[in-house]
Amino acid sequence: MTKSVDVLIAGAGIIGAACAWELAKAGLRVAVVEENFPACGATGASMGHIVVMDDSEPQFALTHYSQTLWEELSPSFPQNVEYDRCGTIWVAADEEEFAEVRRKAAYYRERGVVAEILDSGALREAEPQLRAPLAGGLLVPGDSVVYPPAAAAFLLKKAAEAGATLHFGRAVKILARGSARLADGTVMSAGKLVNAAGRHAGAFSTGSTVKARKGHLVITDRYPGLVRHQLVELGYLKSAHSLTSDSVAFNLQPRRTGQILIGSSRQYDVEHDGVEPVILSRMLERAFAYMPALRSCSSIRVWTGFRPATPDKLPLIGPSLEDPSLYVAAGHEGLGITTSLGTAKLICAHITGTQAEIPKDPYLPSRQMTAKVHG
Ligand SMILES: Cc1cc2nc3c(=O)[nH]c(=O)nc-3n(C[C@H](O)[C@H](O)[C@H](O)COP(=O)(O)OP(=O)(O)OC[C@H]3O[C@@H](n4cnc5c(N)ncnc54)[C@H](O)[C@@H]3O)c2cc1C
Image 1 (cartoon, rainbow, N blue to C red):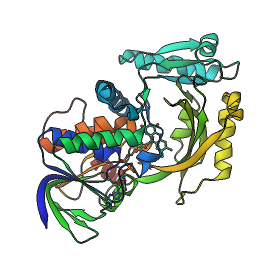
Image 2 (image 1 turned 180 degrees about the horizontal axis):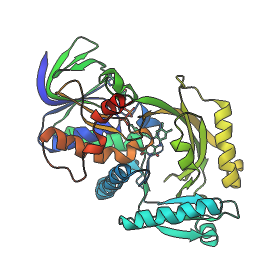
Image 3 (image 1 turned 180 degrees about the vertical axis):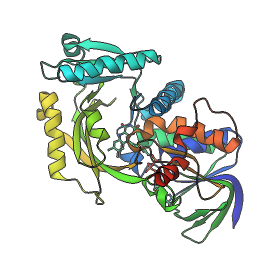
C-alpha cells in the first residue's frame, strides 16, 4: 500500500490532465495513474478544435463555458500548444443549410456568442479556396484550435507544479471503494477516485455506457494561407447526430505550422484501429468537393482514433452510481478537448462540495440509470 492521497485519477488524457490541475489548485493531494503515456488515447488522435456547439442547452453551456476558460488560459500556453483563435466557419452548401445558418446565428447571439452571417460573396472573400458557388456561412470568431497532446502535457505540468504526482506506464486494474489496485500489485488509497479512462471508462463504472466511435484524420504538408479558419460543413451536424451508420463530413483545420488537418469520419462498432481505404477515400472526396485545391496537396500522415461516446451525446461528469468514493469524467465523444476545462471545474465542484458556474445536473452519470429504468 503506497501513501494515501486525497484524489486518485485513472487516465492521463486531456480529461484526467485537466482534472488533475484543477483539483491540485484547490489544495488537494492528487495522483494521476496512466496505463501508457499521456495523451496516448483519443486526446493524441484528435483535431483540437475548441468549438461552441448548440445541439442542446447542456452541450451549449459546457462548450461555451469551456471555450471561455481556454481563452482565459491562452496567454500562459507555451508555443507548442499552438493555440490559434482562427474562428470557425460553418459552411452552407445550399438554401436549406443557409436557413440553418440564420437559426444558428440567432441562437448564439441570444446567448452572447459573437456570430457573423456571411453571404456567398463574403464566404468567398473569407476562404477563397472554397468551391463556388456556395450559399454562405456562419463565422464564429471566438472558436480556436490547440495541439491536443501539447495541451495535455501543459495541464499535467501545471498539475505537477501544484503538487500532483504522476505515474505513467502503470495500469489500474481495480478502481473502487477508495483505492486503486495496479497491474503490478501496488494498492494506492485515496479519499476520492476519478475515472478518466476515456473509452475504457466502463471497466470501472459498470453502470456507465461509453462506446468507441472511430474517426480518421489526414494531415498535409505545409501550405501556409491556403485555409484561414476551421471550416465545417453544416451537413456535419447530420453525420455527427447519426448513432448507427458510418458517416463522413468536410471538416478542415489550418495548423500554425501551415499544415492542413483534414477530417472527419464517424463509425460505430469497429474495433480495429487500422486505416480503412474506403472510409478514407469517402472522407477525402468530400473534402475535395468543397475545396478542389486540396486534391493537389501532399498528405504526410493518416491515422485513426476512437471517440468515447455516450448514447445521449453528453459526457458523464459526477458521482458514479455504484460507489460513493468514485467519480466519472468520461464520454466526451468529439468534444472532449473543448470541454476538458469545464469538466475539470465540475468535477472539482462535486468533490469539494462547492458551487459550479454552470448547472451540474445535466451531466450526472445517474441519468443513464434513469434512462435504463424508463426503457
Ligand atoms: C478523430 C478525432 C477527432 C477529434 N476532434 C476533436 C476536436 O476537434 N475537438 C474536441 O473537442 N474533441 C475532439 N475529439 C474528441 C476528443 O479527442 C476526446 O473527447 C477526448 O480526447 C477524450 O479525452 P479523455 O481524456 O476522456 O480520453 P483519452 O484521451 O482516451 O484518455 C484516456 C486515458 O486513460 C488511459 N487508461 C485507460 N484505461 C486505463 C487503465 N486501466 N489504467 C490507467 N489508465 C488507463 C488511456 O491510456 C488514456 O490515456 C476528437 C476525437 C477523435 C478520435
